[in-house]
Length: 204
Image (tube, rainbow, N blue to C red; front, side, top):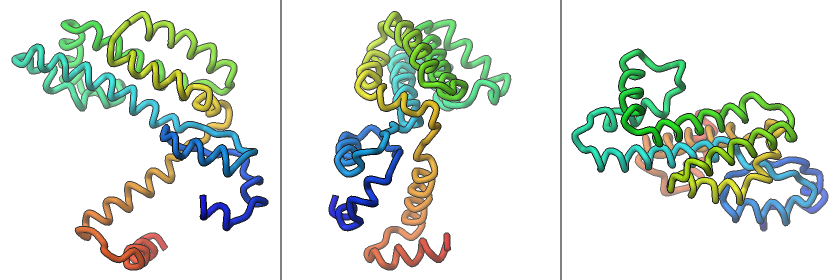
């Protein structure tokens, strides 16, 4: 807040669009500091939360069927795009799906959710598709999906602002990940100015 106050109201009022994750602190600050801006909830964070619901279902099956190797080896297979799977990975996935139809449906719903963001240009079109998706997700009545649906209900209005703006904070997330890697390689920095110099040396 202090930083943006120092930049001046005139500058803040010029901001038209901003993207952030689902931390209430960011969303509240954005509303106060940038009164004229459209707030877009970053789509990748939503997909990540949906992926966590899928992973929790896999882990519950792993605990229920500890001798079933397909649930143990499924973690990275579920994260990959279906068209990038090797044949042996497809076989492991399908074997798991034969035994766990809820897991299969969660997986399908995750793909459908992502495809809506990938292939829809208008907000109106996205709203219609998401209404249908929401209905199907509720019909599954899976506890992990139900927790995601509560999250989705809270943020969906701002998430749908993605259409047709197609704005994300992916570039910033990438830079942050790169900086964290740099810090790990150096075993940490005690002095912020030294970290700043190192970043500038690497990235110019």
